[in-house]
Length: 607
Image 1 (cartoon, rainbow, N blue to C red):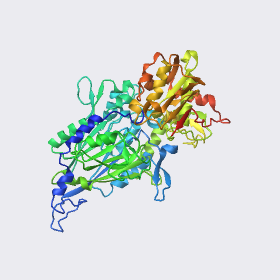
Image 2: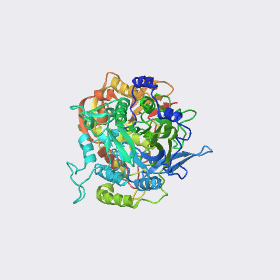
Image 3: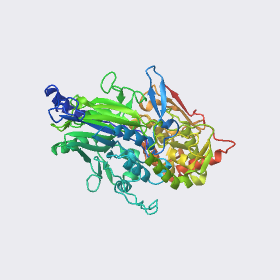
Image 4: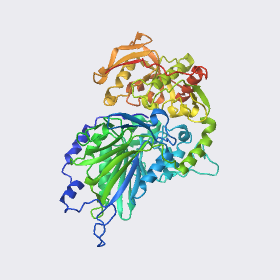
């Protein structure tokens, strides 16, 4: 539901002590000259019929699609590219019609090609997929010929039973089959969840790994999601499940694959990092290997056994191709392809037919933009049209009008214009005494999944916000809660934005009108929130007073690293966040007087 929860990974540094392990790099260094030449599947026997020593395996990968079958709208659909002169170009990208064309074009001329995903293929999806419990996305991924995917945290949004249905097929238990005479077939590819076990039995929920084989080439894929999934998914989604340490799990199964004779291994990890630049073509190996990337994936990569040859990652929606040293100090490829199908990664794995291992020194990788100036894949166009026809009666209903783009996901500022609209909608809907008597509302930034875009997405006309567009912004349909919190708990919650689990990657709550405070980013930890600046309707927060606070059920459960918000009492359950959002749009906009982007003046940021 949100960006990365951080945690203390000091235990992982112990794993770096395994530096004595031999790596492919070391083996290659010991080989006779020429033995590790790039093979490209052609013989090096100069016409004497010798079999090639190596073949190149093409690994295509992407992550965090989130059911974005149609091109994502507004700034959320752009990829940044930095040119040689330092200028940054925003390139419109994404949409499965173009992703399919990109992948199919990339595969041409590669006899050994495997396609893998780093999780969050579904969940937090636009209406076209979300309305149908993401069946359209699974169908599209089958057509894309996806070979394997790790589970992400969003694959658990609707719980383990629904995840099993996406894997195995069958119509929805409540809503049934969506198309007459058609039964949902499920995913043709295995979802891997090596670090997720059932509490009762201790057994893995899904397959921990799979082995891809072609003409004697064998590559093992191990898939894990982030250990912190329970912190960022509703309690119902992870009920009865345990999530384990990513490094220990991958190392355990890498050993098992190695014992079975599978020497080439790729880890698919739904956890990621933050490169120093948002441009997809940024070199994160500058000045040295992995120097330009930070975040949880760095410690994870440093702890994973050298038996693993490459890491495909995700979760942070960032673009990077880096080499982070393994425990033996040898560089190893770590990649991520942003989100929403805007990029794909093309990695060359040179496979040694004698050792059955990847020649790590030959691994090459690059991210490519899924541009929208290439031909659309006809089968994806017809898939989108088919599901759009089913969704249209609901999706096209107008909810309100806006005068310009109101940025949410596309805003990098701590206070987002769309965050203010959403928080105000929640406060207004829950302020009446019989609705909870809310005095202030908080919205988690990760729950805002898109921008409200002025340009028409269909035939509705510019400035019209349709139900489908509102759903794309707030796809979880979380029920709202209003709870009692003391002033002290309220202050503690604001401090938890920048301390504890959120210290390394702050999560700035979007706040309703009337709440103001200063965020001093020159300080560290909880001190970043200037406590004596916190005011509600001009009055200082009284630590002893009880306040009625509105938030979605996810935050009210202490999600996203906000334990203080989980301490609320006297809970009243209100309407869903989406219903309140739509009601606010209807109440505050007409065709003649559209809603304008609000000022962002609630949080004063000192940098």
